Image (cartoon, rainbow, N blue to C red; front, side, top):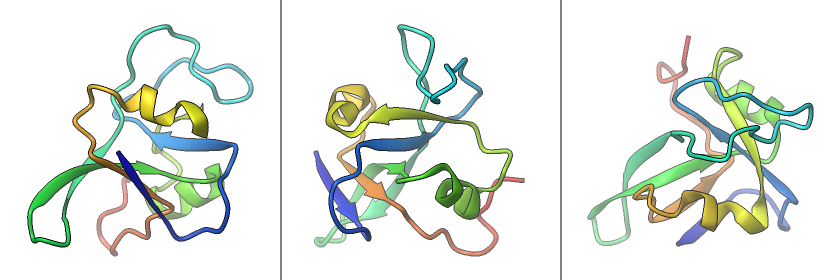
Length: 106
């Protein structure tokens, strides 16, 4: 799995948007030992082939800016992101994406 990022350095944690609310601790980490459905999007790679990527943000404010206040999310340590996404179908992680107008969650 690869990671693309518009930010410098490696953040300690990543904020992953989810399909539904997930019970969280005060620090945003999931309280469940199971799965959370993260948001995956299809993007074209350098060869024009579609692949699924997971969206991730380096802060909650950046997630809210891109996806809106109503977007559910969880926080995972960056070092555990690949493990957390194992089996999701994600081929890469897109960090701090800027979504096009009209694609925000309401």
